[in-house]
Image 1 (cartoon, rainbow, N blue to C red):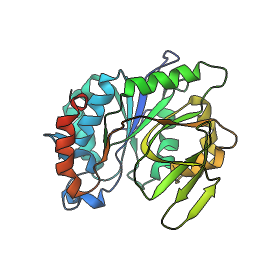
Image 2: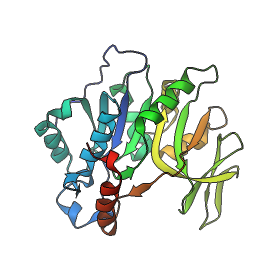
Image 3: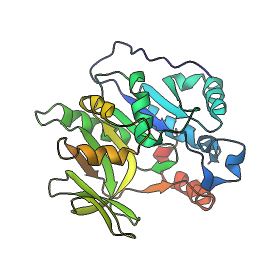
Image 4: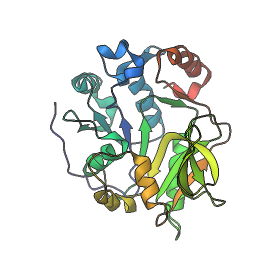
Length: 262
C-alpha cells in the first residue's frame, strides 16, 4: 500500500479535484465482492471505477482522491497498471476501518488543494450529469459575494429518505418517509444523488465532527449557518449500481448514455 501524501501542490485557485468513494464492502453485490472491491466490478466491459474516472477526466478534473478499504490493494494495483490514467490520483487509506462518507472526506482533506472546491462522487453511481457543467456552476457561485458552501445534486425520484429544501433551495432538513423521522425542518423533498461539491471554506468545519460519520450528519449540523444549496437537474437519469439485479440495467444505461463512454 503506498504511503499517503498529505502535501498539496501549489495550484490555481480553481484546481479541478474530486473524491471517489470506493471503500465500501459492496455486500449487496455478493458473491462478486467476495473476491474483489465493488469499484472493480465490471459494467460494459470496464470496472465501475473506470467509468467514474473517465467521466471526471473528460470534464477536466486534474486530481482525484480515492478512498479504499475492501480489497484495497486491488484498487491500488489497478490504478498503477493504468498509470493513474494520466491524472494526479491519490489514495486515502481506510484499511484500518471504514469511516463512512463524512469521515472519509475528513480524512482525505489534507490530500486536496486547500483553495479549491472538491467534487464528491460515489463509485457505484452512473448518471447523465454533465460534471463539467456542475463544476462551472459551483465555481460561478463561489465567485459571488454570497458564496455557496456546498452544492448537492438532487432530483425528483422515489426513495425512502429525502433531503428537505426551502423556497431558495437551501438545505433545511431530512425526512425518512417509511419511519416518518424528521431531522431539522420539513420543506420540498428531493432525493440526493451522491454527487456533491464542497467549497474550501467548509473544510475547517470537519474538525468539529467525529472521525466516523455520514456526510448528511455534517450537512444537517451546519445547514443553519452555511449555504448548502440543492441543484435540481432536470431530466437527470441516475442509476445506483448497488445490487446484482442492477448490473444488467447498468449495461443498458451505459449504452444509452454515450457521455459515460470515453
